[in-house]
Length: 231
Image 1 (cartoon, one colour):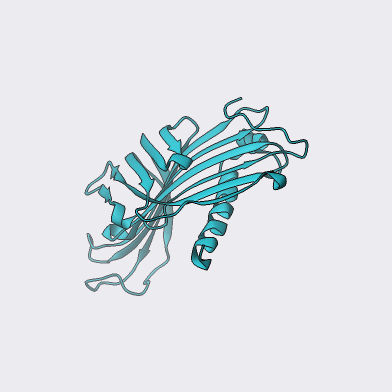
Image 2 (tube, rainbow, N blue to C red):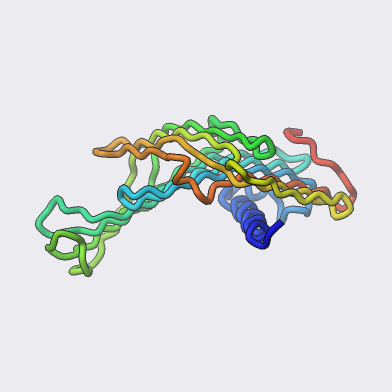
């Protein structure tokens, strides 16, 4: 195992731990103070794409967290960030947009160890749009006025599927004496994002999905209680 893959494994473990915090509220209470405090199973599939059109980045997170003796928590999340130069008026405007949606009842398949995930979602992405006056030339230049920030929303249709990246090797750590088991594999993700607005179609090609991954972690508590998924 080379240093690069070890580094990616460490980053994915951190990403999985951070992902638990996005659940918030009752979900956070179910998770507990930290993985390992109780028996716990955590499964996450993460797809991300970079698209030249409007400098768009799309991320999809599918999560499942199951602390022993408590209700399992699911999440399906879509994140979109964009920036582009609006040339529709004499004064060009730099537009920067951040959008997100999250559901606790995702219509999804999330099987990291099988290198298999899929997600279909129709819903509203909400967030903010920042518009900054940026000159009168053919492109947006230096800011010429104060930015204006407003809340915004757009209906979106998201459909993606994920599989293991060709040539990738699963990274696994399984040491029962340390009550931990972890799994990571690079993924390829493809699909489409449709924003219900003018020119709102974004193909999510596998060739632009670098940074996608599958991850699973499980822990036993100090008494050796084993986790039973869904119990």
